[in-house]
Amino acid sequence: MKIKSVIASIIILLSLASWINPFTADADQKVVYVVPIEETVEKGLLAFLERAVEEAEEAGAEAIIFDVHTPGGVVDAADGIGKLLTGTDLKTVAFVNKKALSAGAYISLNTDEIYMVPGATMGSAAIIDQQGNTAGKKAESYWFAAMKAAAVESGRNPIYAQAMADDSIDLPELGAGKGKLLTLTADQAVEVGYSEGTVKNLNELLNKLGYEDAEIKNVNETFAEKLARFITHPVVIPILMTVGSLGLVLELYSPGFGLPGIAGLSALLLFFYGHMVAGLAGFETLILFALGVGLILLELFIPGGIAGTIGLLAIIASFFMASANVIHMGISLLIALTASIVLSILMIRVFGKKMKFFKRIILTDSTSTEKGYVSNKNRLELIGVEGVTLTPLRPSGTIVVEDERIDAVSEGGFIAKGKRVRIVKTEGSRIVVREIADI
Image 1 (cartoon, rainbow, N blue to C red):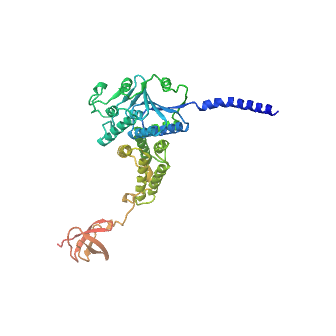
Image 2 (cartoon, rainbow, N blue to C red):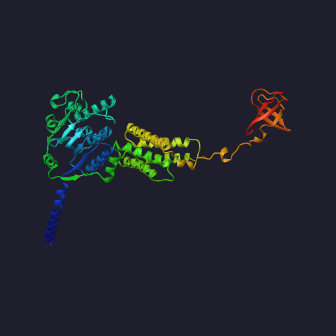
Image 3 (tube, rainbow, N blue to C red):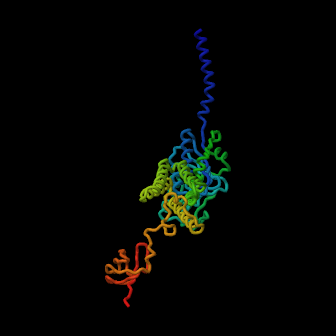
């Protein structure tokens, strides 16, 4: 019986092993993450890539392949992405699927390996400002050093990375003589060692890397991340700021709270939402903004101007805290302020509008004479009446008219005491007299 029990136990254990082995094989299967880098490089993209890399690391992925197709973008965002890629222990591969220009070239150079599709290009990495002009010497120097360091870090000849950013480097054999930035084709990239090979598509790349049997996990942007990338786009930010300011200005000229105010507040809240999702701002910035609005509203009921000034500064500070680029935020606010001033002038001068909002808290009624208000009784009945000066008029003094003492001023110069005068004008409490010449 004991022998039978032992045999039965062995059979059961072997059966369990046959069931366990397939799971063990699955556990040993390699996992490769594929992450897109598309459109403009900005802070929203950085936040998305941080999530993707974190997921790949937690899943124990073998490698991350970045499907690159971008014309470039913001320098500080590219710098952050470069640090992200060099900071992970996972193998990183840039799959240049048509173009990796400017910031895209920098990002690709920060990966372990680069592969390109036929007809793809990489390079043309000059740093420019918001107006499309070449940036200042300080910014250029930083970018040149960053491009060089990225090439050196990945074991590539830095001269080509420098030529992508500096048109003074002469590489005529690659079509980039002096005055022209270097842009490598797929074949040229292989020739100079900036690409490990040219592949037709992602499947061919996976086969070349030995990941043909790997589990492929595609990481795509969520709706919130797509919205955040759109909102944090360098062109969209000044538009949101302008719409927000124009909406609030129009609301000041409208009765009640209507569509302009809703549009203005929505634009500003979208600004904060996008920057919070992108990881650029926290709830402290939104709280600071709300505090600033509250102080400005408080100023409407408490005179002095201190609360309003602090509130305005708090709102401006919240915008700068949420922004990743102080200069760009300053330009955006300047555009919004200019548009608001122009709109206010048009509303007042052209359309003759008045701020309805302030009518509730500002006293606009006047106690004018036309409305029946007088500060003193105007004694018109005294005009033409004669009297005698009780005191000298120099030019003011006192006269007596039918036993009534009246304060008066002379029409001209000095009038001595006891002289006969005639009242020629009355303006409220001001009585003007003229001396009567003796015949």
